[in-house]
Length: 225
Image (cartoon, rainbow, N blue to C red; front, side, top):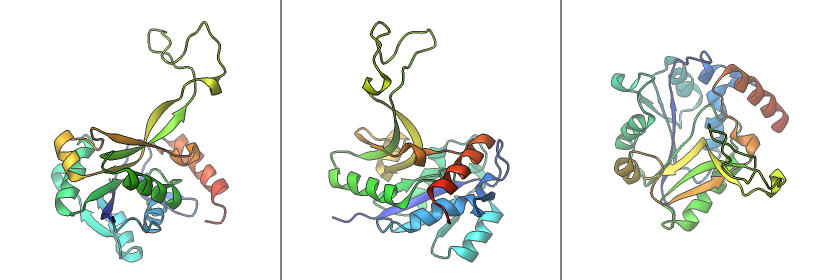
């Protein structure tokens, strides 16, 4: 059965730690173009929606991405301290869909193949799982703030590749229903599917160093793009 999937990309005009990062040049294109191009290349996605307060982003979308739906973020949701779930709920109330996929402009290495594969794997198991989020596998020795081992026995020195894996939520992609968002006020439901993605695609731009590293990796991974 084919379910309708709407992809949401929320973006603010201002950014505190990397000025203007959403529309700053990234390997020859404004940063947000990279994730929009990837979403539009996925046949499993029925519509791409951008929620923003940015005149710059709105102007570029109107000119270059007429197939993308623009939502101007309401004034009461524009403060940087507003929880993302409030912003997403506003979008879900405006655009009807059976499922919503949310990602960020700050995940420019996320590939169309990885996005499509995640949607397909989740849909093949639905309703066993009620939501999906992407993770990065960690096989390292973890300790808490009191120097207590979390995932290993310090008396037994296993190779890190032999440690039981743990998983980090990398915020690259979420798949959920409006019902889950309302009930849990969270993108992650009661029975989530953890979708492991390649570590190189899980780059997230939060500070200037992240931007430079992600741009370098993008050029290595996608030469000519």
